[in-house]
Picture 1 (tube, one colour):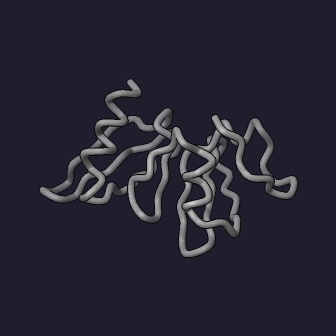
Picture 2 (cartoon, one colour):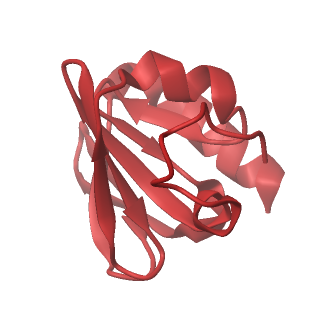
Length: 109
């Protein structure tokens, strides 16, 4: 996994490896860790795309670590979601990204 940009002492290498998902809103993002912690940073989602190439951008506000994806659920003809461990979070997949996300998940299994 690529090293994240230098965040002033807030995210160790061990924590970087345990990132489950990232949720963004404007120029802020919330990083969710495997141990249940979440950390707020003032970086846009684009910043993380460059430094975490193994992560999947599922939506304009969400990136996920494919290692933590447990299942894909379809709730309607145009509503597809990922279920993530460990908290069983449900993450939406944008309609235009469904095929790409599924292809990446299949190739990573």
